[in-house]
Image (tube, rainbow, N blue to C red; front, side, top):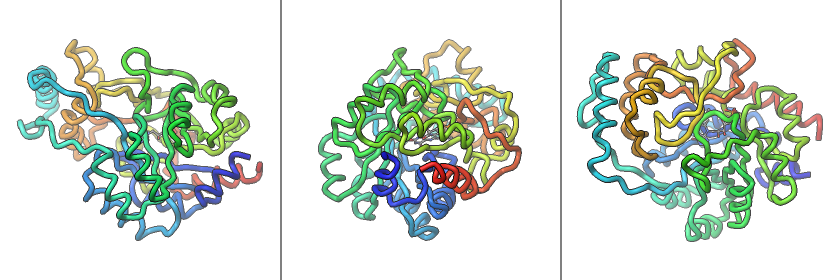
Length: 354
Ligand SMILES: Cc1cc2nc3c(=O)[nH]c(=O)nc-3n(C[C@H](O)[C@H](O)[C@H](O)COP(=O)(O)O)c2cc1C
C-alpha cells in the first residue's frame, strides 16, 4: 500500500533507491539507477553551490528521470581556535610515517558550506526531490522548499527521530538501521546515546506511529532481505554498500576489492575520520587515531582535518589511510556489477510481489 504511494510520489517504477554516498556515488551511478527504473541519488553534502550546480548538470545530461539530491543538515558547532592543534599534529605525524607530506594549508580548516548555502541553487535549478541526513532543515528552509514543491525525505535512526521528521511535515523517512554503511544520520541523540537498533527492530517500532512512507536502509544485500523489510512495512529499500564496487562508483580499486567477495571482513563504528559515528572497514588510520588518546574533534572539523590525507591516500590507492565506509553486510558476488543490474534485479523481484 505504502509502496504504491511512494512509487507515485517519486514517479519511479521500482521501490529501489541507490543510496547517496558522498565520495563514492557519481552522476553516472545516479543516472544509471534512475534509468533502470529505481531512484538514483546525488550526494552533495557540504559542497559549494557551484559544485552542486555542476553535478546536477552532469546528472541531467545522462537521465531525464527523477533522482534525489542529498544534503547534510547539521549545525556547525563553535570550535575554540586552540583545540585542533593536538589532532592536527597527530594527523601530520601519521601521514609523514606513511610517506604523505601534509602542509599547513592541508590541515587548515576550510570554508564549510551548510545546506543553507545550497538552498538557492536547488530552487534555481528546479530540483524536485531532496533527501537529507544529520538533522532536519529549519522551519524557514522547509517552507522555502515546500513553496517550490520539492518532495522531502529525511533520515531517522530511532522512532523519536522519525516522529520528529513527520511532525515537521517531511514527506518520507529513511529508517537507517545500525547495519548501515557510512555515517549514522542520528540527530536527536548525540554523544554516547547513539541509537543502535537493527533495521528490523526500527521498522517494527515505526509501524504504529509513522504514517509517511518509510524507506528501509542498512545491511540489505539480497532480494530476500529486501522482501523481508517490505513485509515489515517499508515502502522501499535503499541500498548503499552493494553499489560501492560497481563500475559507476568512484571508490578506489583497493576499496572495491575489499568489498568484492571478502565476506569475512566486518565493519566497525568509528568517529576517527569525521568526528561523527560512521560504519566502515577498520584500517591503520582508524586504529592509530583510536589508540592515540587524543580527542577527536567534533564533526565537521575532524572531517576537514582528514580530507587532504584521504585524497592523497586515494591517489596512491592506499586503503589503509582513507575511509572505507561499508555496512555490516558486504556484497555476495565477487564480480563488480553495474548499478543498473542491481536496480533491475531487486526491482523485478519486488515488483513481482506487489
Ligand atoms: C560509502 C558510503 C557513503 C555514504 N554517504 C551518505 C551520504 O552522503 N548521505 C546519506 O544520506 N547517506 C550516506 N550513506 C548512508 C546510506 O544512505 C545508507 O544509509 C546505507 O548505505 C545503507 O546501508 P548499506 O550500506 O548496508 O546498504 C553512505 C553510505 C556509504 C556506504
